[in-house]
Length: 458
Image 1: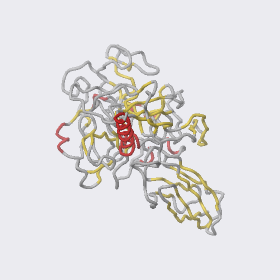
Image 2 (image 1 turned 90 degrees about the horizontal axis):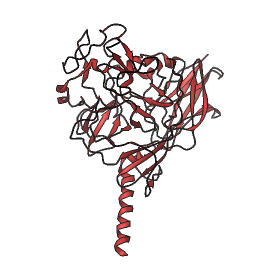
Image 3 (image 1 turned 120 degrees about the vertical axis):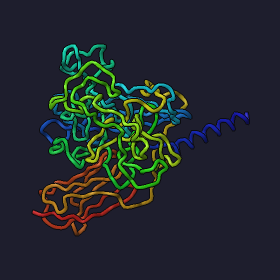
Image 4 (image 1 turned 30 degrees about the vertical axis):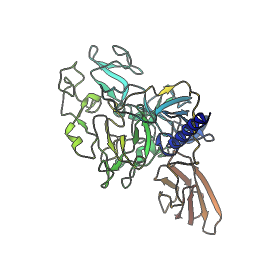
């Protein structure tokens, strides 16, 4: 009996230590109160939905963590202006990730259409493709809505596979995402379009610029998700050197557009079934095979390998781990292969499951972990200031909990307040009805507090 008790104590201690130290358990944004919202075309007032946002439960045992999620973000989804009839809907999904992912030393596994990872708010990650390809037999696109099926069906190997980032840009919402049969997903870096240095979509002109995080070139990007092989996904910036030293730099893809005008060869130079010639209708980058991998880039520490990752030290993994990065170019526009791919680095596991096995422990945020902080000043951007119509408050660090924003008159009277929910980045006040003058803005959560003076003009 004594041996059994000791074994159980060791097992409990091991599980407890996993929860205290493993980012695959600690990093998820859990919520059981806030519900989703969506926009419809032409209306910037969100419509409230019934389903919860972010992740509802995190459960783990000694080998795996199980994430139960609706697949809906706290930022407002939609509209999807390319005629997509789908709305983001509750996926009621469970995902399993290994706590100790391992490298695949055999043949690399190719990413597939549909889910290939999950962001920390429970939203799905898709790879570069949109399920549409070029059918040389008909000299036309195949697959996807409005096109005939591709030979071999969805997911079959085609010579020229369309890139969703280029082809579907008009249908992404301000957060750079859209649903497929209700499954809301990002193919790319989940930061709002009009926060890029060069804006390539006008969708944010009417709808709030929100997303999972804000790109910041001065600090290591946050851990934003996990791929289906269990390895973590980071935002666009990291330490220049893999050992965690050097300046903060943009982490770069080692893929580049090929110098071609006709599509008759693969990126390896092999002859393939011809695709459409390069044109304004089918520009370079329209198909995945328009890119080639430059192996010599990997010798430079801030360039990534063929899977779009590298082994490196990060704030959450001080001993180092293989990490994928959500790559962007110098203008902060998404850069192929965008997040993960076109193959996985690690051993692929069956990430979507139907139930959680018995014997797991439920992780409750706030009891211990990686993200405890002292009371510090929050990192925010307030603009425009002065303002006459709209005051925007942008949280520059990943918002791991609900953040309260209050606006006070100079005498201390509360004028207005709002909440930026965990996993979102933007709060705002319509100041058109306010008197001209000075105001005090207070931004606070359990991490810290920041006050800013703002001026309203007429």
